[in-house]
Length: 333
Image (tube, rainbow, N blue to C red):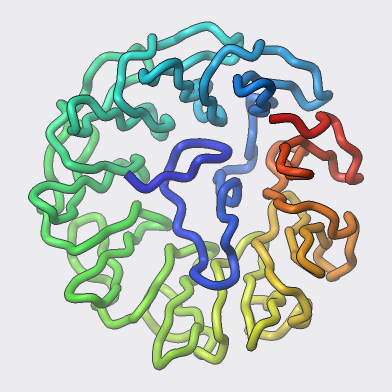
């Protein structure tokens, strides 16, 4: 199962060229981290701090992930389970693998098959599938017999497994692949946009990035180009701007296709909480929407701001900074 490891365990499609650090790039909704808790590691064990940098869940897990819908995936030994925000087990470690809750259900893997549980740990959808994704819009992608389709929350196949690959529903449409081409389907399984693109990404803020004729542009939900393909790479819109690249430099455009921040960075990532990660001189820092560097490039790795803090890497260890760039948790590992 393809997963987003930070802040939660869910599918995330990274930009092929511009955005190599999609982890932490996407947690939808107005509150990106309503728990106010952040994963930290020390001595090879994982725990959680609050926004002030205070350890509130002791180091006790082999791995830990971000909270969604009040629960977080944790790993102890070779078993995976869930804790609540107090650090107590809500669902004891028992699964081969487990993923974040979305719309009240979570995918879990046992004996090589994926099913879905509720927040009490009760099996709602039996583990029948080779692979499974998060619920979105009441549907979840599943794989059966090597083909992808969609089930509802009762486990009924509402779109039969027929696609080479598929993504979760986003803004009412889901990205699917047929014969090496990407298009978009509606919840009833009918094509809204026929498979025709070499590459394509989820709809975000009404537009989707696609590749056509060797260049990237953005289409609307009718499949018409709102921004003609003229970029060498790119990623989805976030907070009104999208990352794009020309040659080996990245910048940001608005929805008219005009540059809001000219291409000048080695690598760029979407805006999150008003700031975006950029790379200069081999180091990551952050800019605001005017393109002004607000946190100097200094980190080996950096992730999106998520609930007021951002994870960064220094000397191979990871810590957290606030919006001023001040460390609230010194890098540890």
